[in-house]
Structures are given as structure tokens and as C-alpha cells.
Image 1 (cartoon, chains in turn orange, brown):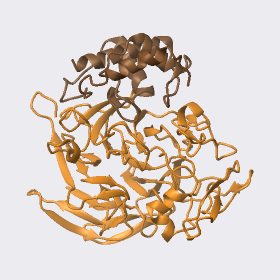
Image 2: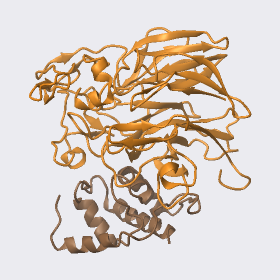
Image 3: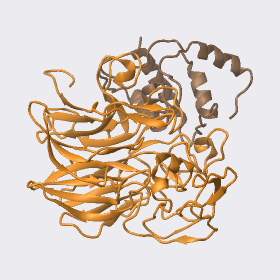
Image 4: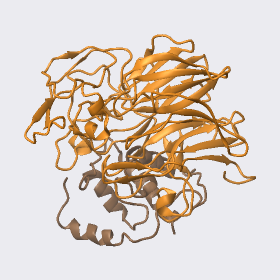
Length: 416
Length: 115
């Protein structure tokens, strides 16, 4: 059993990203260490590991790691310096490496929230990059300028441009590859990535269903920054090549001009940033809890475990109030989704009358599940649990040394 | 947001009944459920499409818990059609009458699981 340790956490905690082997006695063996944290995921194919090196520190990469410990970048220069990073990867049945690339910002505009994340001080010119040419509606947002100490210093910022750059209606932002908010693919030997689909915000989890279809989890927008968006859950998508999925102007196929759905209290409705849209965005397979942080996923393939064909999704749990307020903890569990009808059921949850991480509700158990993977036999589900991350006044507070790897198997005649 | 002032006391009364037990509705708190009744199947699918993201499993999340309160069907229907606070309204083009009726029954079903 192998897992990646990211080497970076929100709250800006830095360690060393590494690939670990979990020994039968639970011991840990470091296979390789590296850079370009966070290392967000790993897949294995024909004798090599493939890792999404997220790129908060240095640009994003896809790494090939041989059994001899050699590290070879097969993709470099991914736009990962902002809020969201390089994710996945997942190798397709026909031998392509697919990965997700998250966006720089929450909803298309660089703002004060990005300074609070930390990266704006390192990369003040970083911004979102579209996968194809887009035409802007010319909306601009005025904010304080955290780069100066003058409390009266204001900056005007548009969409898809650096902080402090206004835009005008009709301005065309050229598309680039690689780009943000996309699922891309590359041959296992490496090369220039191809865009499979775009218009996502943070396509974090990627997995192939037993019938050969690619599904992803997408983290929905938060109530923060210059263009806060209210009430957007996380999404499970079936990826259709060549399709634009709506970010930054749609959620689950619904336009952000809808004031009944997306308008935050005491804030204007988000509206459109783009003057034109590549296509009418599709509707998702399933809508998961708002702020649930639905992340890694895998599909059950074995009747020995059950729920064959259903997607199992790790929900890291909300990071309220920074992402937006909730009335009760959301996520902190593993759910299963029937992809044929979008119904969602709890699968692995903590005991107790209320939902939440074990450190809050007591009794031991899950903290923040971040990824799931079935073993090759399909009869065991492994859950990677990030561990304790509380949210303090300054933001996320991860607690080192609290991560857990869980193993779930079906008991005789009963639920797993 | 549109709701009559006369409904406010009713909403408050039901709000005061908020302490109506836990909201856990999945395993291991209740038996794993396989819904086969066609109306409940429709209700579950409608709920998971339109309601789940704010009321996960009927429990509290972005919105309050709704699986542990004795909300009458007429009030649920009114709130769905008209919204309240930050909850949007859902027109009959989004949730048909049949789907809304099924969702009401599904909510009652979820409530019953906690009894």
C-alpha cells in the first residue's frame, strides 16, 4: 500500500512531500521525497508511480517515479500557484494519464482572499488562465491593496487578469494550454497536455468507472473574495470530452445571474464575467453538500464488497467560516453515490448524535477523509484521512501527526 | 423572498420544535435502507437533486435540519414554492407537483427513521 503525503496544507504549513509505503505492521517507509508541494495523489501503472505534484511551491507537475526511486517530470509548468492545484492523476483503461488542474481563484477574480491564502505575496501577478479564448463582460471589482500599507490605497481588478488590472467589456483573454479549471491528459511517456474538458473550479478527484467512464469531483465556489458565490455545493461530474462545464459563470448548469440561488446575504449576485459562453453547461451526476469538500473518489467493482458501480467519495469536511457559514458541520465522512440516479447515502460516518470530525464529536473515528481507493481485489476500501484540521481565527490549523489510513471491508452477512 | 406575516408565528412554532431528536439517518444509526416504493424513489431523487446540498440527508448543513421536525406537508410545499430567507424558491418547472408530493413523503419517511 502506497500513499502520498502532500507536504503542504492550507494554513500554509510546509513539510516535505513524499511517497510512502505502508508496511504490514503499519510502519512507514519513505520511497522518495520531492518538491512542488502539495503532492495531491498517486496512481500506479506497469511498474511506475505517477504523482500529481500540486505546485503551490513551484509550478505544478506530473511525476513518474520508477521502482528504483528515480523521479522524472512528464509534465511541467502547470498553473498551480494559487488557491487550487494539480490533482489526480488517474490512468485510463487505454493508457493515458488524466489529471485535474484547479483554478487560481475562487470565482475568477484575484482579491483579498487570495492574499489570505498566502500565495499572492509570492506571486502577485498570478491569475486564472482559460483553456480557450474568452471574451469578458468587463466587470471590475475595487478592493484594498494589501501590498501597501496605505489604508486608502485601492485596486481595481477584472477577471482572468493580475490583481490591480481592470478590464473592459469585449476584451479577449487568449486561451492557453496548460490552463486552469480543466481536466487534461498526456501520454504516459509525457508530452504536451491535451485539454479534455474545462470550466471546472477545482477538479480534485478523478476516477474511471467500471464501464470505462471518467468521473470527477469538483469543489464548488465559496462565499469569499471579490465575487463571493453563495449556496454552491460540490459536484460529481461525468466528463464529456470537449465540453465546457460552466465556471466561473454557472454552477451545476444554473447561471450565476440567478439572484434566488447564488446571491450572498448583503452582497450582489455574482453575475456573469464572460460576455459569451462556449456551450450550455451540462448538469451534474450528483450534487453534494455545500462546503463538504468532496474530494477523492473511487468506484466499487466487486460484489464481494457490494454497491458495484457506485462512486465512493471522501468528504474532507467544511472549513467554515472562511469558506462561508454553515449551521452544522458538513462532510467529514465517506458517502456513496448511485451514478445512475444521483442519489447519495452515507457510507462511513462517525458515531454520535451529530455529524462532525471525531475530534469534535468524540469517540474516535474519521477526522477529514481526503481520498479513497479500493484494493485490486475490490474487497477492501482504503480511506486516507488527513487528520485534524481545526479552523481558528487566522484560518486553517492542521495538526501534524494525526493522519490515518483506514481499511474498510465487508463483514460476514452485514454492512462493511 | 415572499411569505405572509400570518405564517411567521407558524414558522416560529415549528422552529421552537427544533429540539426534536438527532438527525442521523444513515447506517449505522438506522438500518441501511433500500427504497423500492416508487413514490419514495421519486422523492429521494428529487430531494437529492434540489435539497441535499443544503440539507444533507435532511440534516443540518448550510440549511437547518428538516428530517427531525413535524413539518406539515402544506408548509413544506409552501416553503419550496416560495422560499424563505436565503432558501430559493423552486417553481413547478423545476420541481413538478408530483415530484413535490413525493419529496414531502420522502421527508416524512426520513423523519420516521428517527422515531
